[in-house]
Structures are given as structure tokens and as C-alpha cells.
Image (cartoon, rainbow, N blue to C red):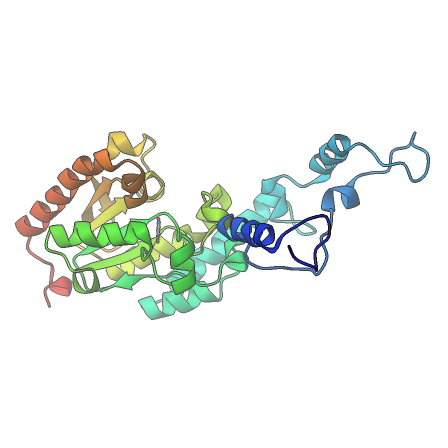
Length: 294
Ligand code: URA
């Protein structure tokens, strides 16, 4: 039992709580003492005697009422939300288009403040592998390990991806280029909001254009939805080929299951295996373009 914490709170309990916070994406502190923002933002009750507290449920409801909706938060104190969102989208497009190389694009993203995820992430997770590779893989967003290392697909799902690539004769470092639709880790690995995804969209589009692969592979539903515009679930779209315009030319794009899903549903690996065999065949059947033949 610790001397420093009252009420029977043990060091082990505190460690467990901190582990829980880290798992949930809370990995930095912003004040020495806890602040109850709900209490601070609750309007005073007109009928309550001075000093009387509103019940917690009322306080939370009032805070919810007063809080800006997600679409309003973008523009707190500034122009209306839709204008602010339009500004962010324009700034992202202009920056992405101005980048003439992948290095410039990485620098443009690193100095881009239009996506709130940057504030909570440790690192920008731009890409890994070989930009001259014939095939480019795009996932959804980095997880904890990727955030720590600043590289995509290096955690458990990345290790599975590496094994799947090896099985069709592709070495990750030389034969694949890997990126994500969103390059910063969402706290707690939650799904990026539509605003966060939209802010980053011009960058992944430009990254694909600059890489100009022969084949694009979307890993998981969110990637397929963002890049291929499909609305159906991934179990319906996986294994299908789509046309994709890189901005330079039309290429083939394949939607497949996300490795993280395969770790949770190992029986579905047989479907992913079919997709990877189809990818292998497509690569063997098409001659590499000049940019990728070296
Ligand atoms: N999942 C993703 O979508 N991307 C990563 O980089 C890691 C896990």
C-alpha cells in the first residue's frame, strides 16, 4: 500500500489506471490538477440557493447543450463552421498541390494545422517502403505503435501485412509503398471524424499522384470508401477491382480486408489470401511502367 495516496488507493491500482488511459489514447497531461469542465460550463440554476450544486445529470446535460456541435467547433470565435471547413479544405488542397515531391508533401503535412489529430499525435506517420514500388497500400490511420515509431503498419497488423506480402513474393522495404488516409493517430484508435478525414484527403490523393503506382490496394472499408468512393461494406467490395485516376493516369485499385480485422477474424484470412493472389497475378500480367521498372 502506498503512503502517498489516501483511501486505500494502491500503486498497482494507479498504474493500472494509467495503463488504461494510455490504451484509451490519453498520453499527455495538460494540467497538474483535474478540472471538471462540466461543472465550469454549467449555467447557474436560477431557482437554486447560492452555493447549491445542480445534480450531475443536469450539469452534464447543460454542458452538452452549451457545447458546440462538432461541425461548429472548427470555427469557434471565427467564421461560420461551413466557411471554416471550406477554408481548411482549400488550404489542404493548395498545400498538397504545391508539393512537387514526396519530401515536399511530407513537409507540407508536417506544417499543416488543419487537422486536430496532429495536436494529440506524437508523430506524423507519412509512409514506409519504396516510393518506386509498383504497388501502393493505403490503410485508415496509424495506431499506437505507428504513432510511436512514426511509420505505418509496424504493429501487430503491420506484421501480418508483412507476412501476407512475403507470401506473394513482395518485400515490404523494396516492393511496396505504404501510407494511410489519415497520417496522425486518432486518440484511442477511434475512427477519424469526417472532418478529420476530409482535412487530410488532398494529401493522400497527392501522395498517390506523386508515387503514381501501377496498382493501388485499399486496406479496409474506410480506405476503400475514402479513395474509391464505394458506399458498400468491405465484405461486399473486397476482391473487386476499381478504376482509380492518380491525376496522371488511370490505374487499377483493389479493395481488401484490413489486417487488423483479420487478426480479430482469422477465418477471413482465406478471403484476403484470394485478394493477395489476385494482386500477385495482376502484377505478373501487367508490364511495369517506366517509372517502376528500375
Ligand atoms: N492500421 C492502419 O490502418 N494503419 C496503420 O498504419 C496501422 C494500423
